[in-house]
Image (cartoon, rainbow, N blue to C red; front, side, top):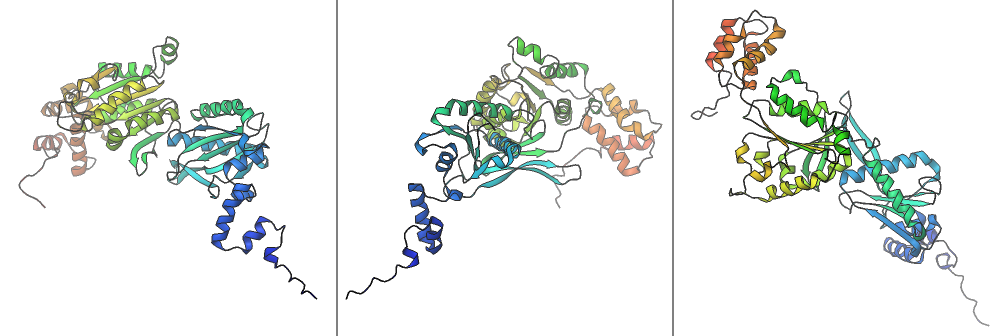
Length: 450
């Protein structure tokens, strides 16, 4: 009599689910089963790749899924992630979240917004790596899936997945989202940003707001007139320039020796545009290595003011012996920037003669203003401004005459030195002694060292 077959072990019984198989398998076997599951369409939904996930929620075969992709600057991807977050919140439980691919779980990222009024960090949490399914009637009349991969270790990409038949709807949806990037839903728009070079290229950080008024800087009237003309492209004449096809981009080069107020003038202009324009401050590394990327990023923030401080330290003359690559990038980028709208550029230099003539042409800088050393009358006004709050019976005119050749920063330092030495009360003789002693000058002892 034949021996009856042994009972089939539970681990080999047919009809078990993928989850049951994975529970009994070793780690290596589970990895292999996940790959096989994806190939045959039986992978668990939680780790399904973007295309199977999209096919499931679009109700089509994976071969009928179409992708509309956008690969742009890092800040644009972050803002698209913020728009994705807003739509997810708006439609709540109707949306479904899936894996960005390769079995990785959905992940979130943050947009740094600087500090709040109490000095605490501000940030917005946005999708970083995930795919989200939106049913018909939410972000579009047809079902669509939005996928974002916005991490330095991965290729940055934003994708709208649709059926092949709905490809045109996906393209229109992508267009609308990209238009919204520059609008009020961009949490970085209108802020002061710092552009620098990080481990993964251009890095954008948030700086404190700039608050500086014209009353803090004494300059000739003709300089302020040129500043007003520069600002008109962003304010009173903006719409007229656009209607005439004359463009709203402007370039202003501010030249002058150290201490005459170049940086403060830039702060005054930035403060005048606060809220309406995003100010981007570029450090020397950004100017030298990622200037083109910086101007590409500017498109993300709507109307922008790009500040290139001490440009002569980075861009020299092509006849000099140093590297000319930054100069070539600068010339190409500024010409390209002319094709954009609402991009203002301010550069400062201590020595305009050190710049290549091509960098100073009108198609790069529309206006070049030179800030002179203050004359006796201007030095008197600067002394009056800083001495006024003290209410001391001091006539600054004679003192101003003795400060011939001093910059505005020097004159301020004379008053500052008097306050440090004597406090809130001192007389003309004490102030004059400081002026004549030269103690307010920054000097270097080239013989003695600590």
